Length: 313
Image (cartoon, rainbow, N blue to C red):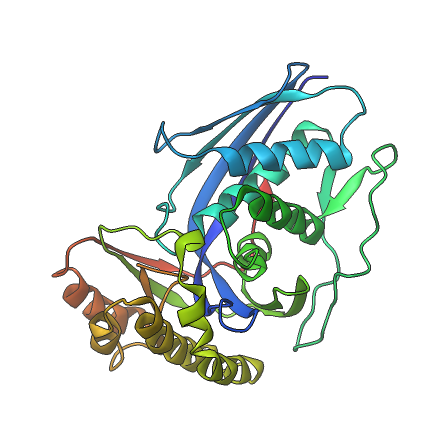
């Protein structure tokens, strides 16, 4: 068969790092990753990452393979996948989740399968994902965004780019807004749509999620449970500040950027396993923080949150 599809997904910032307890929370940012998938009858999938010709492409290749295996025809299907991204790699801004989500959606589009919405939790209703059916490749004509997200999470685990599966990051990237998840059971606990301005500082160094010291993160589990409680009360900005201090200490990142931002930001946190720091709040106040962060090596970006999530182009 032959088919071509394109899709975009969003980067995200962290409210709660899931490494300590398995419960995590993230929020979508207005930075995008685009994937283009071209399917053919060749053997295997070849990936390309526009920003780095030598980058590891196993994740995006596995996303195509799994999507075709789950929803495609029974005959052999191969092809190519290429991603282009505004989200820096290994910076804590969910580049892997964005690439996986965009690739899965682009593959579904190439297969001619529609991506549809499903009822999503509001006001902290709970929704589990354990009742998902095994998909029959002969009769699926539509896939929900949540199921597409979970397929990317499965590929990420198989590719070894994440410790937890990063369902918190992936759900925010795919659905938009701020999500809270239990990554141990791939359960979406809540989703809301805050409208925040956001400031991102990314230093020159890089940190890979799969290399994070999980044992040190587990030592701050009491603080992570406090953050989860704050998130359950919708106090996301306060939650992220507590998270940032705890996980900066656990992972060995400086807290000075966060301390600089605290008088001006509603919330500020180390994002993911670092090294980026993200602050949210009033735009004029964040511009004051940006002036301070601009004195540091690296780059700053003033942006906003997004509630629309990933989409097929």
